[in-house]
Length: 111
Image (cartoon, helix red, strand yellow):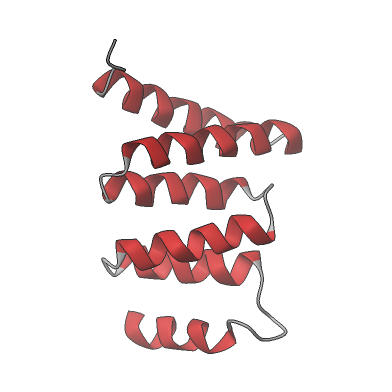
C-alpha cells in the first residue's frame, strides 16, 4: 500500500500540484518505508518550497537523525525552531527544542 502511495505522490512531482505539502507527504511516506535518503531529499524540497513549514523541518531533522547525519539534524531543527517562532507554532517549537536538546546532550561538541 505504501509503495502505491509513494508512486502516486511521485507522479505529481513537477506538476501543478507540486509544493511543500506534496513533498512533505512524499518524504513522510518514504521515511516510514525506510527510504531515509530519499525522504531527506523530498523534505529538503518541502522546506525549499516553504521555508516556514515547521512540520517539514521537524521531520527533516528526524530523517537526518535516522540517517546518522547529526549535524544536519541539528541544523534542520534550528531552522524549524526559527520558522515555528515566526509563525507562532508553539507546539512544533517546543518539540524541536526538546529534540535538539536531546541530540546535543547525547553528542556534546568536542573542544
